[in-house]
Length: 110
Length: 121
Image 1 (cartoon, rainbow over the protein chains, first blue to last red):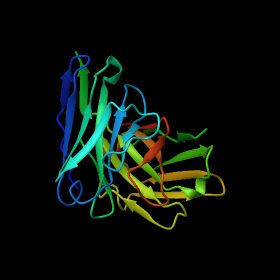
Image 2 (cartoon, each protein chain N blue to C red):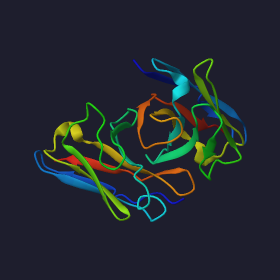
Image 3 (cartoon, rainbow over the protein chains, first blue to last red):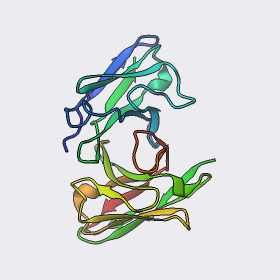
Image 4 (cartoon, helix red, strand yellow):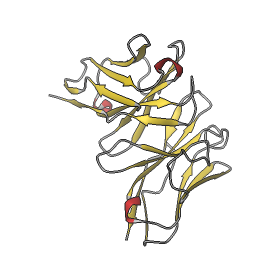
């Protein structure tokens, strides 16, 4: 199972909005609602920020928004803050009952 | 409060074996599936394996199938990962993650702090 495709890096100024894409195939992202996003701060474990394409766990800021179109899922962070600087990963369930991650995107706040 | 604590990592020679453990507390262990996820040295995240809430269903990434075995003991609130025939690509930080469901979902809501596996010469 090939990794999902994410841009290596995305940057934005404080207050701006950025979007991270996550491209898979009709065997994973395109086929299931089991798409999630994780934020990983340096030296920390990944933290769930979006599950089932567009749902936020309690306590996660409404500035994080997930959606999907076809084989591509996306995460938008609005009102960018310095604390959002981290690595972000998408993950998807696959048609062979496994999971696959994206390669990760480093978000830099300018 | 939910806690997951991994242990068992270390420096191991290629081809040797290692057993990782994940101890949990603060929730009804037998109600949740559990995953192992690896953070590789280049910061890539790899899904490794999943085990259902009752231990009856397991599944593995192709890269580890046949070499890794996931198991759990619901009487002790622990999960394990047996790693055999260690390869260079197995190195990284291994995290256990709780699945909100009994088998699989996209909601892996609690993670441990990880245990590091490296290769020694």
